[in-house]
Image (cartoon, rainbow, N blue to C red):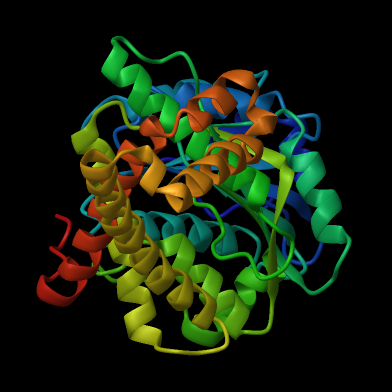
Length: 392
């Protein structure tokens, strides 16, 4: 494992001596100094994108004080590329940790990085670290992400975290079907980013979440770890969001804290990704039950299932009626069509005219709704009928 030696030099000495930093001597002695922002990047088989992600941190308008890359059960060259970044004198101080045989997925990697950080600063995050940014290794951050997230979290001492608004990377398609699939994901991410609100955000994004270190220490004091280490935990970001709320912290999202993330290029990969997200959410909600922190998510899930069934059933009935009796016998149907042409188009107006035209055409979104309904229903069924397999 690289960078695991217990540090003893002051932070000023670590910053002035890159060679000492590379041996892991990067943290201040307990109580003598402070890291303002530490970045935690778990990376599993991310040789393609890890350098792009790390470069986006090096280009921040407010550079991080320390980056911790946890190479997690990787079988490719992720560690080599991350170490190449760490060895570059122009980059922020960076430590690369290698974690093999981790059965706890991303949660285990994140906790491993936090444990290393706590040991490096004397045992506790509070007083030694102000902020911890967790980001995926397939994500790029807007160059002012850290600056903006610090401003948001400083606006309210009860805020435990600021979530990114995620946008999909564009221009990655190779054929018309892939262009459609990725385009609908871009619209989906953009619509969600515009709709994120400051109060009672559903989940902190795994792609980029900026935490108050004191809030993370609260979870460690409460349950011994920040991220729940269990192979059944498919959505560590959502489970941690609930834990923060339950321990008295508020969380928020900000439209200007932007993270650009990879999209799924095939239908199979998209369904696998969304089934994991949806099934993990259902599992977490089932485990916690109806509480003041889960009722909104449970209600939204139920209403989504009902709405999808109604729209598909009612729409099929109306189309059949028009085929038999003509369009003049379906005025309500056409009124609804008019609404669903305008409303979706207006919701994506920030994405530009192309996105508005796609939404106004209805058919692209309707097809994607069918796919979305499939993974939602299958996730609920799997949550009740199947077990989550362990990750070896």
